[in-house]
Length: 220
Image (tube, rainbow, N blue to C red; front, top):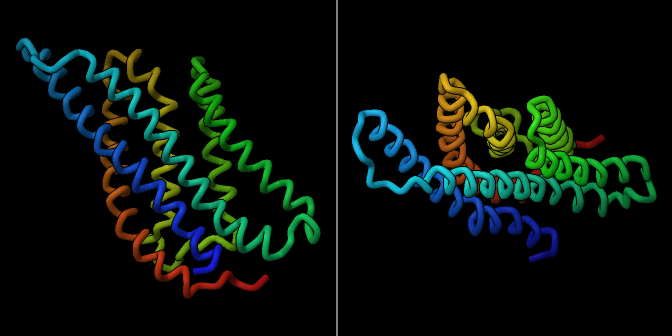
């Protein structure tokens, strides 16, 4: 196994040891939180601890962070191995080399600032910047997009999930301030979609580990 082939395993490894365990915990706390809310709404005394809501939010933030990190790791592997190192980009195209490095830093920094932002406008700005960074990095030609099967593509599923996680972090404040439950219902619907995409990610990721080994990036 070459170093480049070994590097293909880094992304799925961290998905298995971080994202999927956190996903299971988040789903459990989400179910418990909803059951407690429904029981109280019906006038019953719930035996579920009030802390489940806080736990759901905190683990949800960890899940969102893990998703964007492993997404950037997945994008970084082909960009580094097939573009930066193979083309010696720091010598052949220094501007593009600096641009790609800064885009990774910019995307992660925007996501960190999103966590710290409390004003709705700034949350929207940092969420948009984080999402733009993921999309721009994902548009590099060395990344295996499988556009012909976009409806069953690991790349497109992953980008959508990542954007949904960013959006979930951005609307946390709105969920708790909105008495009409509009944002809460939006959160539930979009994260049910995200759960289905996570399942699809498990299937398409295994498939792509085989296909990427046979795929070469298109000529310039």
